[in-house]
Image (spheres, rainbow, N blue to C red):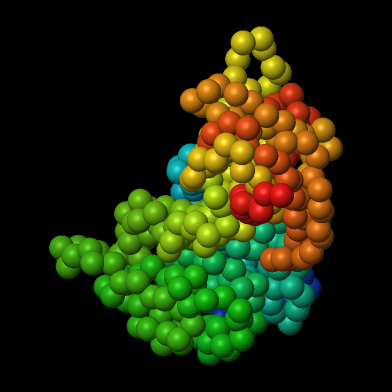
Length: 460
């Protein structure tokens, strides 16, 4: 760190924000050199290079500083998700650099957000480590690769924890809401942006106490609209939550390209806050809409976890390609209906004496005694090596092993290798079901059945 001597000898960082004063010019030079004011110790100001900053409890990646919060009670069968938080500027006038760049987000580690979002959700919080107090996450002439590095960090965290693009959501409020929009557009990510300050006019009317100088635009709207027109994100996935009484944000939000972003206007009656300043209304809107924010966040976050079924999942093949009803399985098997087949999986339960351990397909028509039949099984992949199929008569309690398949034909359907196994046998009883057992299928093996047909053969 280096000592910095200001002309005014003030102990308040805001006192250097008048563009007409010499101390403001000194701050400008520090920003151009990729330096910032770190803190005030014994009435002495210190500065540091951005790449040398070390925030307590944060991880580093070049100039970037961030934290990762692990999921609470993760579940093995749920995909991993990621929320990326771009913090607001609630403490941007603090002398401590970490507070200025990271803010004081209400969603602090292990608090409301982590306990209110879907399972298996990692939370990445990124500090705004540019200029003196952050740059709204924009690239600047002194840090032209800033936006690219943030995108790369998000991708690296996704890769590290196995999170799909579709399971990633960006969130931000106020200043951070602008960062969420930038990176939502750039990366094509689902985004919730809460009352974003897309025009800084309110904060530079007199003093530039956010210390943006001329390094970021006062009006972000043109650049955001350019990013919006080039984004791969759907309009429905980029959401701005705002209120028409938030005068420091709404008039400018309303200028965004609505072909590429969904703007939600809260119906709160804020007219009762007659004496509230524009800044107070902005903060009130963000703080009092948390339940709604969490609802939208979870909708975005978990939308890929559910799929609409317009018809029964198996109806396109089961009615036509199966001469049996749906299988009845014992506790030794798990079965699932897939898009093109039924999967019957031999789990790791061990057989015990006297316990039923079978899988049975009850035939739609009872077989005739003395008639020859051909059983055709169409499978995805090859048949388990030890499997045996039996015919069973429930009325006579007779069982018959149908032996090995006479014909095996390989083909390709639905992107899978399919095999058709044909068995020939004579019905010596009034068989009404096809049966196999856990003793004939090894643990971990599965049957992926695409069709089960039984046809009469001409008796010799």
